[in-house]
Image 1 (cartoon, helix red, strand yellow):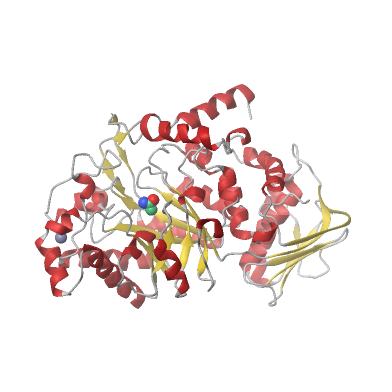
Image 2 (image 1 turned 90 degrees about the horizontal axis):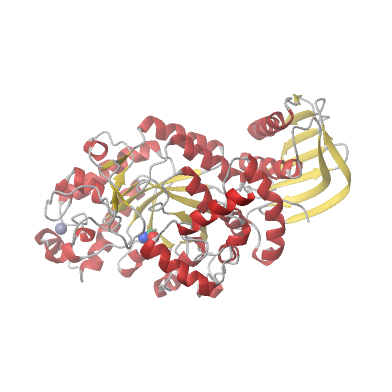
Length: 536
Ligand code: ACM
Ligand code: ZN
């Protein structure tokens, strides 16, 4: 067993050890120079010296382009004298470096001057092309350094999509030059609900923050160098209260509101706040925001949320009702379909596809190009017909991939053992693009808490989205994970201890009620007390 996460597709250990020391030389075909330099950096950080770059294929370590290798795939052929790395793309070569990093660093203590790696032949490529993580920065804002750190961790785990939830009821987090109030008003809230969803206690410390367009550009290119595409999400028509607080005319009744301090609305009725689907201004606003964001995010995808959209206001709004009548729509669900389609068509003209949470499938009039992100715990019968027609889906099932949940609700084994068939998902057409975990942050006020929710879940996500399904073995994964924990520790990550990741379901049910009603921090606090005692 080699200690690599995610487990490579094929791996044969060879006789002997390959040694890296200060006289080791390294070569790369031009297009793979970035990956070569990352390997040089890793070795420098560990041993203090930089390998000698040579323009000769007699080097000890050589990166070669091989066009026959699958996109994002790589091969490593390492005997006692030489290590050859083959990839067709920069991404594949970069992933080879991540594998080598784990192979040479897994058993290290202190600063060594020589690194050894067991001779090995590896052939590797991903199961899914979409291996994603969603970060919610509306509920809590972490800032550029935290995001860059997350991107560094993602590439280590061969994850390639950061879905960035930049706006919601509780804060708007991105500068839009044409609508300055979005950040002047919408990026600030006076306080934050504390304890749990079931509590009305508010911590009246203001919470604010947003990314300037320059910061966004820098983060997007930082991600691209790590083979990570960033997909922005502007959640609409619901979950848009921070924008409606900034521009009340976006709402059906021009009501003056503030970004929410309670996660589900400050006052009765506020959770029903929604953008008006019957006003020209709403569409102009959305198109203008898309125009600005398209210049910042080159991704061919754009996420518009679309989840949990209550229709109470649309039912009462003369503009929305007129839109239904004029366009001969059946009801308010079809109005949301109409709203989604207008935006999908606008995005298409910009070469982008619209992604939305699976509730949007409730309307039967949707554009074919829309990608549904399947999150609901409850089975959604529309998903299979969407897949049957060859339309695309990304899987984020709550039971496996909601990383904001306590481990006692979403066990680590639930993430690792995710199985489409168990959830009745039938993909005859290979229309599932991949897997994405979500990190909602209502109860994640600090970076350390963020890390606790993420690790060691990111390792399970990495393997379930990369490694062929028939090679997944949870018990064996846990053994490799145990070897990986010192790496997490050396990177300063406060992870959930393994004795807490798989609480039994009966206890988990109690814990979940505590999490929802009384104390969303109980599990984290328990783990931190354990950490103090055991210094893990
Ligand atoms: C969601 O969790 N509302 C997508
Ligand atoms: Zn309206």
